Image (cartoon, rainbow, N blue to C red; front, side):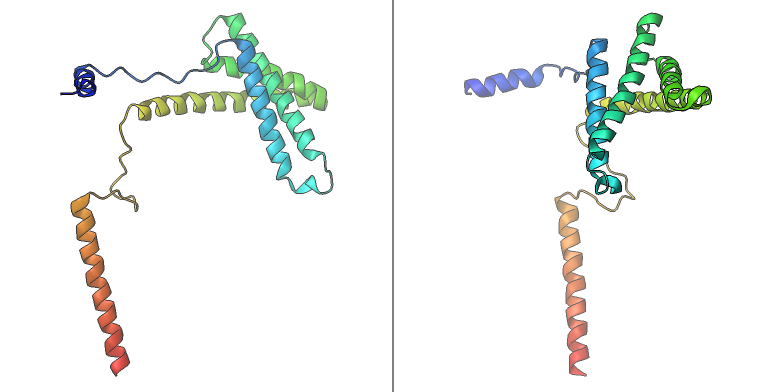
Length: 190
């Protein structure tokens, strides 16, 4: 046995270590900065596909700036609440309180006292919903990372066939093809 085969046999008998979890940035500054930059890029992309781009050539810059301002304010408020409450960064209540504060601030600047109330409710609802969906999606992704392959349901139209099922399908296709060819020949003769 070669030395490479021995190493493989030794590794084969060792227990498999669990996969590493999805890691998020560790410092509040990084969490706010990365999210703000990502929102700016998404806003710029939204501006590029906007139908107003022809009338206003700098609309991607405006969209990118607005998205970055909103994301920076919301994420900053959420991180401030997290640090003040001394809680984990995946706590949904941080998103709710941060959404209330950032929505009130941006709404007050944009629409006065009534705008502050509307924006704070909207930001709190959207922030809480996105945080909740993000945590659920993260758990599902980590769950699926542990599986070797994805098992498709039986009713799904696309299936991965093994050799036996593939041979059966080819035989069935040959039978259908010969019936169709034979049917065309009969139509041409008559």
